Every structure is written in structure tokens, then in C-alpha cells.
Image (cartoon, rainbow, N blue to C red; front, side):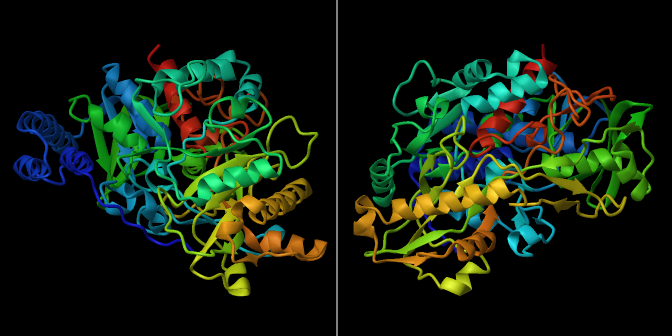
Length: 574
């Protein structure tokens, strides 16, 4: 169970939060000036910010009240990829409407890095749950997804994990386009990043718009875990996104999207700066029900806001609704497997059998837990040290990514079974190259009904084997000498028989909340989009979110989703 942690705000941090609230119309210009001056900002800076932020709020209020009948582009979803592609289109001069089903991100649960767990199952979470599965002992695993401005970048753990070199080379091979390979993607990362850590001119960028730093002032247990990893043969690196992710893996402190002690979501980086432009409108509380089509050309979208139905047209629609809701919208619009559409009485417009298929997510085991000798307060986002490693030496790249979590982390089964004390810490075994595949499907044509997910976690025997090996490696690390000062006792799982360990793995399995791959990019019959992210058989429709991944990346998915948004921006503005 996670615990809340509150950080005092620095003066600059307060001003940043006030400025974001001003941009979203949550406070007025005069009140902003009063509070920002009281926080210590200079009069000239406050006046400039008040002018720009006030203009943005007024522009957004006007645009929302005077919706156009038609836009150059409609972006469905303001999440990690959607915020990027919307900003890229707006910067190119397009008239852009961004439709977000959720509401504002200007709340403490989003802004405070340590409060991220409080977003789960809140109004900022779509509330999806996987179907019960025998492969996890009949359990129904929760599948949180952001329903808020900024999407997943507003509610998850702020980790900036680029992915492994082999991920993007595999994507390029699947797409038949070298623009997706590692060398090409690395150039995008270098272009957009403002990396605050150890210089690495070959791999890291500075001066870009995307702030990335290594965790600041980490809990002492985090560097101790790196020493523990080295004691069992896992090399520690200064940067989790540098050389380490071009080879066999290693251990490192986390790269994060935290600045001055506050979360920096992707909307703040990309979307907020264009909100004062008259050519972009962010409409929150807008639930898209279907795409409108003329034949096989998408002409716009239907959506509901405040109980009223709206229909808006566009020259291009970009679906960035996430790996569950993007295939849902496609199927409700008649684009998907014909047999599935027939079952829910939706007329098939384009038969694409891959829509909703191939669901993937990383497995996160909750967890291997030790009681502290002396309690340590968690810092940053509660998770500061990680490692990538192969569960089998014959693999070509790492398939596991455990994270150290500075509080006890157990499931609804293992928590009552082992009763971990509050003063405890966790290493959570993680599987980041799953072979199990699930699907997203609909049970009705009601657009307000939730899509269903048959996730099939650990259904492939190789996945269960890899998870068990990861548990064993985490226990070896947690019980090693470099962590002994932090250990009073091992709480769970302890030494178990082979059958007991299989049962523990199934009862402790959870997810990293990295839902993906349900509208994959590729060239085979099950692919949904081509290398340019256009939907096969459909005109005027782009998909830009984690659903297009041919295989989920090795590690947390925020950074690769920014890449997807940037690639969409490059393609659509070329």
C-alpha cells in the first residue's frame, strides 16, 4: 500500500503552479499577480506571465463557447502522445480542436510527485479492470489509464524510460521504415530533451523543451540498491537511458519528469505553451462517441459534453485516446473485426481484424518486501532505483525491469497473507517483454459503456517462468550485504517451494499500467496502421498513442509515447 508524501513548495514552484492555473482559467489575472508577487517573483516577470496566461485563459474560454463547425485537425485525447501532436499541429498553424474526456490537471494529486497513487480509481482514472483470468488465479487486475489533461503523464510515476535499442529496430522492421529505428528515434530524443544529468553528447540532448533529470536527493536505500545489484553481477550506470539501454541492461537511479519537486506532465511542456494561440482549442469533459465517415473517409467526430451531443468536422482526425479507448472508438465507428462488429450490431465500414487485438502490458509483481531496520521516508515519486536484466542469458536484450519502491507494495491477496508492516520497502519484479497477448472488445454499441479487456496476463508459460526468475533475483538483491543496513527481516515471499512460488507469482502479479499494442503498426493483415500512422483502408485518420506499438517498449512508456507524438507531428506537418 502506498502512502502520501507532501513536499514544501519552493517560490519558483509556487509561481509555476499559479501560472498553469492561470492558463486553465482556474484563477484570474489579478489574483495570479497578487499570489505570484507574494511568492517572490519579480514585477516584470509577473506582468509578462499574467499577460500571456490571461490571454490563454480568455482565448480558451472564447474558443470553447464558440466552437467551429470545422477544424483542420481534431485530436482525440490530450494525453502523452495527443498533447505532443496537437502542439506540433498548432505550431504549424493548423486550426486544432483537442477533445479531452477528463478535466483539469491542476490538482495537488497530479502536481505532487508522491501523491500519484491517489489518482488511481479517482475521477482522473478511466477505471478499467481486466477480465478475471485463471493465469492469475482468477483475479481481476486493475488497468488505470489517465482521464485528465495530460493523460497517463498526469497520473503515473513520472519515469522517463526511453526504451531499449532493440525496441525501435524491431518497430522499424515491422513498419518497413527506418524512420522508426533506434538511430532515427535517438535523434528525436536528443532534439527534444533538456537533460540535466551527466553529459553524453552521443545520446542525450540539452536545451530542448522536455525537462528530464535524475532523481534528486534520493532516499539512501536507492543508491544502496545499485550497490546491491553490482554485488550480484548487474552493472550500475550513471544514466538509465544512455549506454545501459543499448546492451544487456544494468542498474541506475531513475530519470524523471520532476522539476523543483513538482510533476511536469507532457501537457505542461507541449500543450500549455500553445493555448494562448487562437488556432488551438482544448475542450475538457468531451466524450467522443464515434467517428463520422463518408464512405471510408473520416470527416470528423461526434462527442458529448455536459449531456449535449455535438458533431464537428475536420480534414484530419488523430486518435490519441489510449490502447483501450482508441480501438473502442474505431469499433463503434465500424472499423474493426467484422465478426466483433456484427456481434454488437455495428455496421462494418472497414474490416480490420487487428483492431483491439494484441493487447500488451508490463507485469509488475507486488512484491518482494523487507521490513526496515530504521524507517526511511520515501522521496520523489516513491520509486527511485531500477534495473533491467535478462531472465535467461540466451535472450538478446533485457526482459525484466524491477523497481525499488520505498513503501510496502502488496496485492489484495498477498497483503492479507503476509501482513507487511508500514515501515517496509519493496523490490517489485517486473516483466517488460511479455509474450502473453490479450484483446480489447465491446459488449454493446453503447458509447458510454466501458470497453472490456481480456488481458491474459502470464498466460504464456515463458512469462510465468521469467517472473519467477525475476522474483528470485530480487530476493537475492534484497538479501545481499549492501542492503543489510536497511533490513530487519524479509517479509515476503521468503523461501518457497516451486509450486508455492508459482502460486505466489500469480497472486502477486499486477501491471505497470502500460497498456499498449491494440492497433499495431506493421505490414501484415493484423496491422492497423502503416509506417505513417494512417489506418489501413481509411482516409483522413491517424492513430498516435501506445496502441500503435508493434511490441511494448522495454520500460515505462511515457517517453516512447512522446516519440509517437513527435513522429506523428513530423509526418502531418511535412
